[in-house]
Image (cartoon, rainbow, N blue to C red; front, side, top):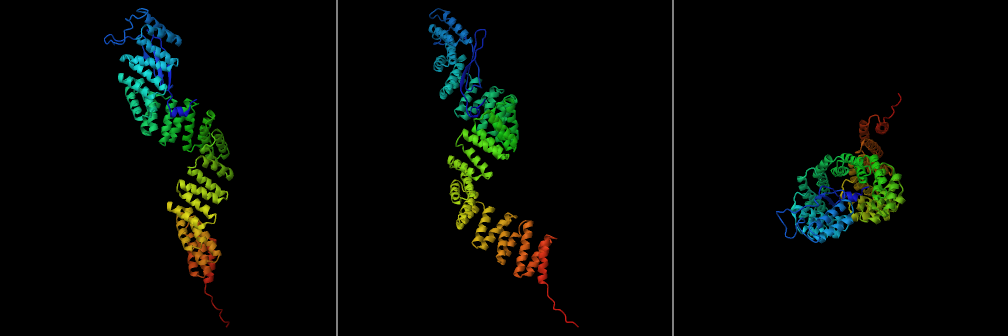
Length: 573
């Protein structure tokens, strides 16, 4: 089972040794910066320095006569090599030490001693042995000694020393692919990104089919935000290794960042086909499916992630979000609560739980969740804003006003200003509320609800001209808004007919059904005022626009009857 943090964010350092039996007892040794990124170094156990370039501080092991005689160090060396091949590592160490006691400059013996010590986990002793090997500076094999030394140092988090050793290896052998690969890994870990990228590119120039290097390069470019370059390398990595779940996963992440969510979901789907227990791929596939509005598929992917890692609060939270968007509020609430059991105070789960309760009309539990979310993250605009809305729903406007002030201190938005105004109005502070509505309109001059509330406030204060001006704006923005019409009805019933006519006139600028009602009531109010000509003209226009409308026909008929001239009865002959 994989951990996303190890897959996506860090490189684990480790060491491993593998043995290969050859005619002269060759030893293959591998220390890799990441366990899954194993690099193999081959060193001939019986290598001899070139006779054309003797070293003053390294005797030829074939000719040295030390201690037990000419062949004695070699015999101990060969015995140690055989023991190492049999995994009898402690005995191998003793044999190599015997060889070195007889011949202190026996480089091959010290090199294999270092290998054996590393295998036993005696890292400090292995490092010291390698350091003594590289002091001889035998370029034909010193590069490999520097390399193995670097990997031991990296395993102890001695990164600068490890980097120096890898630098030395590459100075001796610029085409040393494994050294360059592991230096790139090390540089990336040290956040020396540009140097790591350069090493990966040089390595691929040397070995274009190095699939792991291409994958690492693509992943690093992805991390750095160079998405198109990352896509190019990751698509090549997938083509080179179609069975690599990690390559498909990284490609899926890249495609998600590029907004190609359907292709991302497909790539991530391939990753989980290859490895059904690849939990991070299930999780990210859920995100990709959610973005394509495939809510059922998203929930399915998140469920699989939860089944594999039920201890991950973030996985349960995401499953809850998918369920909530699918309309299953009860199941969503259950997942949020499970997430909070795993991680008390988890802001995202608290906030989402509050939203789920709020949308279900359960305002008291919503309030509790939003309070906890606000406490967990006081700098969150959303938590403070939704807390204010919930307090308004619960009829607690003074507390709501306080939360909206907190919201506005975090971010000045139209919605926060508008709802701050509502909270003030519900406390009877009408003029303060109007100031908030005006502030909302300074942010968004076309915010319809602020215009509506401001118009209604003007009406309440008797400022009819200001109300008419606002409602004219509102009717243009929202042709189906009935505020002007309703204001006209109220004034009509109060027998304030000239004002009613003006408000009905505004309503008549709205959409068809509102226009019909506005014209009808405007004509009726004009008739009641005694202005039958204007009433008849208005109603005739309404009937022309809405032919056959019975209410308009009746009203027009009444007006015509009232305006018809009366003739005195003629005298009987």
